[in-house]
Image (cartoon, rainbow, N blue to C red; front, side, top):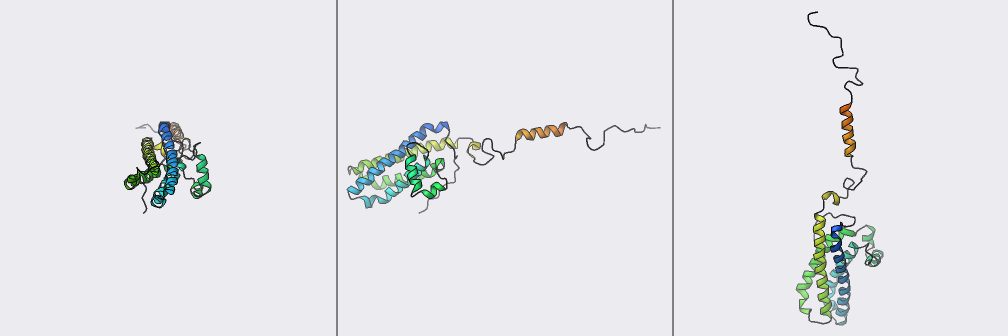
Length: 212
């Protein structure tokens, strides 16, 4: 099944300062997803439930990969990103994917995974220790969706000129027309003396007096 993703433009650069706190919380939510996901996989294998939880773990891993690419320059996740970029995600890394461009896909996929996980596996919460890591992975996923939504709201509230990546939207873009040069040109054209270059001067002829 293919899930259509909305074409929502996100900035390529670092997030604004207003997002700093929520970006930190989002990062630690992704780290928690990694920790609880590993524990969930290990105990599912030890308890003979790996086959029943396999596809949910694959979906969780995809969300973790997107979250890692979103924080590819972070000091805590960079080593994991480098590992992914040199192995199974090399094509994505070569295409320059990552950063805030992963925010919306990560938020939507993680929300869908968490909802389906909760509906299908809440009966296993009491199956310890697997249930503990299952609940931890669910809580971390919902937390990641919540903080990603807060960051998304701030980014959507930014002026559109700050989000556009074209030359006209970049500060100091060389291809953007200079408003000052345009105003200077208008001033020069309006202040030029009339008749220059044409040989004509208004009211400068000899003329004839009426009746003469």
